[in-house]
Structures are given as structure tokens and as C-alpha cells.
Amino acid sequence: MPNPKSLLRSISIDVAGNSHNCQHNNSHRIQKGHRSLKIKRDGASPEHFCLRCALESVRNDLGRLAALEQAILTAMAAQPDVETSPRRTRPRGGA
Image 1 (cartoon, rainbow, N blue to C red):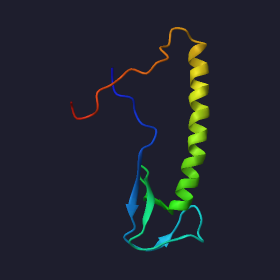
Image 2: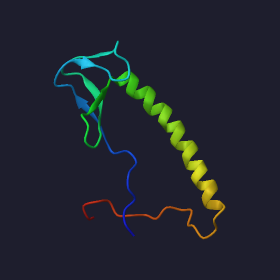
Image 3: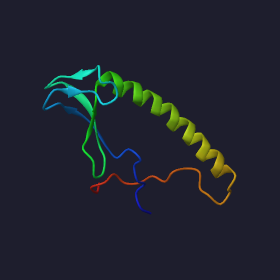
Image 4: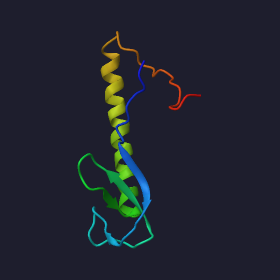
């Protein structure tokens, strides 16, 4: 069985190479050398968020993901032919 794909594409904590504004709130300035959340999107320039806005977004998204998980489990329970427990997969790179 193939490994499940991640909905979280390319998201990481990065060190700012230049000073720039947070892309969520322009009044938040990310200074050169400070850490920020970096989101890479296909075919677009990366977006950078200050850590305060990043944490707020992550906390909000955790709630949304928990609600989505419940909706998926409810839908799976309505379809008895669907396995409800995820299969264990080996970590990428062997082992």
C-alpha cells in the first residue's frame, strides 16, 4: 500500500535572510536573522509569517483538522467496507 500523502506540503521554520513584513499582518516585522514560518507553494514565492501569527494559525488549523478527522470517521462509519484504523507504514528511507 502506498504511503499516505501529507496535506501539509512544504512548511518549515526558517531564518529570515532579509527583513520583511509578516504576510498575515503587515504591522508585524520579521527582522533579518529572526525565525519565521515559511510556506512554499507550487509555482509561487514562499510566504513568511511571524511566529506569533504562525502559532495563531497553527492552533486554529489544529481545531479544524480535529473537526475534519471526526467528519471523516463519521463518514467511514457509514461505509462499513472502509477500514477505519490507519495502516502502519514504514518510515521513508527504509528501516
